[in-house]
Image 1 (cartoon, rainbow, N blue to C red):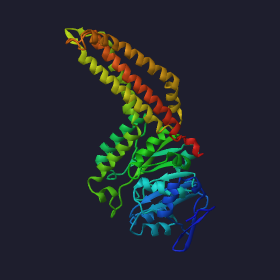
Image 2 (cartoon, rainbow, N blue to C red; image 1 turned 90 degrees about the vertical axis):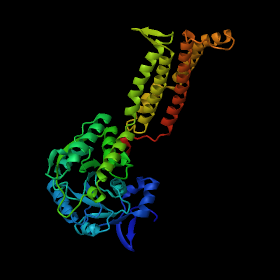
Image 3 (cartoon, rainbow, N blue to C red; image 1 turned 120 degrees about the vertical axis):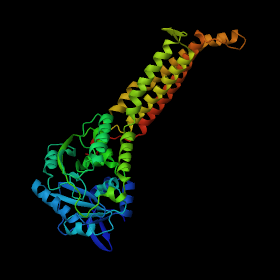
Image 4 (cartoon, helix red, strand yellow; image 1 turned 90 degrees about the horizontal axis):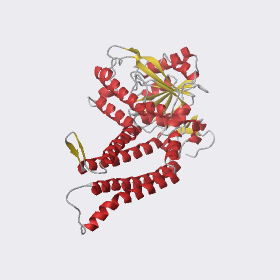
Length: 438
């Protein structure tokens, strides 16, 4: 298909709805994927110029989809907002037909996965504000007015909170309610200095501009954590809204139960993985500085020879430990600096590290360290030549200074290479400015 202004999708020769003009802003890969896989079905009673888009992934939800679409329409009416309902359907049952009959748009998307569904749906979302959730009637979409109010107050990312709202008896397994969600939520809040009460709540809202800038990559359950943590990294205006969480209707099994007992554990694991890989600097930056400081204290204290404290002698082996800790800490710190660049939506991290590691200053520091290292090695070299190219059996001051000299050389080389990599990375990594989409 060749795109032109307001092109039309066709299925079986039947013209469907024009593709939104925002296609022009998509990457080539997204457009290619759209051409190959996606089909948009539009109801006769379609809504023009919606302010809110309710975007819902669905997989074989024919048991609940009729009532769910009716709930959405009721919620939009109660909130007094013009809105569309977009069902992203990967079903093999009658979910698509039922959704269409109820007045919802249907995006037929063969590839499964919650994250994949939102990525596929993005070019078809017309509303300024987006509500996300599930089609299983566990979230009450008749009550969306609070989300709309927060959007109009200027909030860009709005999390539903089941714990601040209401959880119906039997709606959430005890494992999820008292262990899985609290533990993973605590981890995310510690990693990202956030204060979410329910990071896995499926009912949430985000502006369309923020969702585009967020550039979701997760294909499955982990989209939930990626979206939450990126909202923090992007410094979006965030709010929480209490929501009702209801138990599954009779005759419907949740997707976790359909997939087997291992499914909740797998979902928790991949969500944890998403938190860790997007917050790698938490384990690298400050811990690296701590290791570096500890290593330097040990190495410098022993640089003049063995030290005896309270009858215990700390000698060359302890100094080697200090050298090892220093090198490990320095490398960890450097990796933490680089990790920040990959989600530097404000540009502050890149500017800060370029300021700290300016090219001229870093080269000068590296040269000074290399010179100091050579100076520390000279006593040992003198001793080595004076003893006929051998070293004495007892480690004394020259040996300790030589270890310090090696540490200076390694640090000088690492600092020089890191400076080159840092400046190259800042030049090469595409800016992640959340305002760019506006």
